[in-house]
Length: 213
Ligand code: T5A
Ligand code: NA
Image 1 (spheres, protein in one colour):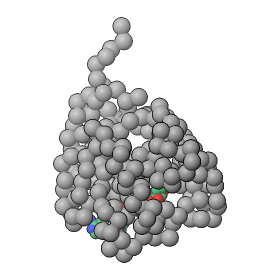
Image 2 (cartoon, protein in one colour):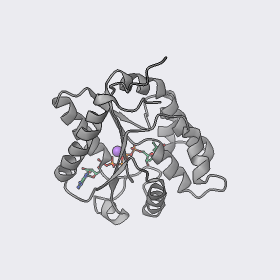
Image 3 (tube, protein in one colour):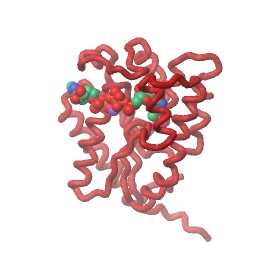
Image 4 (tube, rainbow, N blue to C red):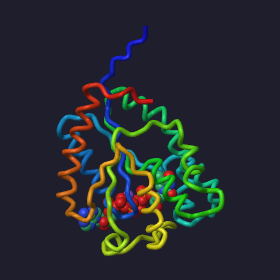
């Protein structure tokens, strides 16, 4: 009979939040902290702009290419699917993955467009079957607070009205694995809270998390 004993493995931690909430800053700091504490950990990000699909996504985000809304949504999802095997391999080998954006961004940004036929249910379907994270750290920041951070950048989605709709979509997806962190605090205060939360998730997975699928 196959063993159903939980196996020790790495933790799958995802960071989400609207643009400029501080995700990349905090992910980087958290991975360095985990590594310094002797935890095997890697920083990943989506979109992964280094792959062939990722290069198409980058052209779209920087407005060098126009791509149909449904088609680009499927590209963002495909960019996660092409990393799935490696992601599972790393987690099973005991490496904790700290991932800067994942499928929730995929759903939130496309559904926020309000395009006919591209409702949240449609947006979620291509990501069905991807591994589910052990924890989602949602960095919560209002559009006004984000704008006070020097404003949005030049990329396609970095507009206040659109970001408001993105935040509504994220709000509708909050689940039991989500931890909402007030991202208007200082970088150090946020990091301290994230370290405590991450330590608990990593320890749980090291003891033997639920099998990752
Ligand atoms: N997207 C993504 C989709 O449409 N579908 C998908 O499936 C996926 C995965 C690119 C775009 O792609 C979309 C969403 C995005 O629009 P990206 O490459 O992750 O996604 O976006 P970036 O532009 O790199 O990152 P963000 O704009 O989201 O910013 P971050 O990472 O949240 O913020 P960060 O850390 O770079 O900080 C922003 C600024 O604020 C300062 C930092 O120093 C920096 O200047 N800052 C703070 N200032 C004050 N207090 C704090 N606590 C601060 N923390 C950071
Ligand atoms: Na970022």
